[in-house]
Image (cartoon, rainbow over all chains, first blue to last red; front, side):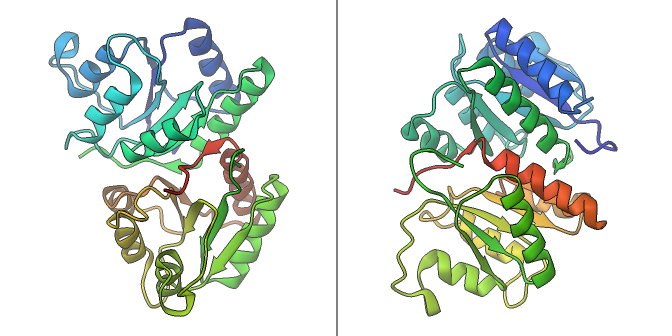
Length: 147
Length: 147
């Protein structure tokens, strides 16, 4: 990402194996930013809206969100809908990063306002490769600053 | 790009040198999709809405748009605003691909609904490299299907 901006990446992923693989391969893709991992949709919303356990938290850095769809408590669609419909968070770029690739799910996510949709490949090596590609790309993306 | 349907990439770029470099480096990254290049914002809007000189055109394939900001006739902000405010085109992913990296311009584009913002590096080799990263990334991205 942009070196000057110190963007924090919020990874919302409930599978611990995937979470580790994703973090490892983002780093291999050259991403040096802080990565915060949360394992359910409710925690993600609380973190982003600074409520619940995160009431009063300050998040100094602008965010980019990597969002799985299959999450407990609130699923990814619900998180996406809430974040993209709230003035405070609607401009945070969201990359949906999930296992399903059915066209209906893809269209549904874009309808809800996701910025980009990436399907996790099933096979380990391709999964790693896709995440590294994501990392390399995120290094050239500009993120909107926080208000 | 996407498995089910061939995605046409619409490149809106008025600098012919940049247009050639972009196409060349997307191809080097393995992008085999059709690339349609238009050199002003008005043509881009007409193409997308099948008006003006593109009346009666058929665009069977889903689209992804690479959009420069500095365009004649209608600039990139105007094109972005029109696309993202029309129900027929609002879910088409738009990647801003432009020279400015001013944080206000970045935020403005995300406010207007761009999916991703990429700044074109000034230096030739870095420009080519950034476009290749973009190409590699586009090959793992899913875009919404046509309605």
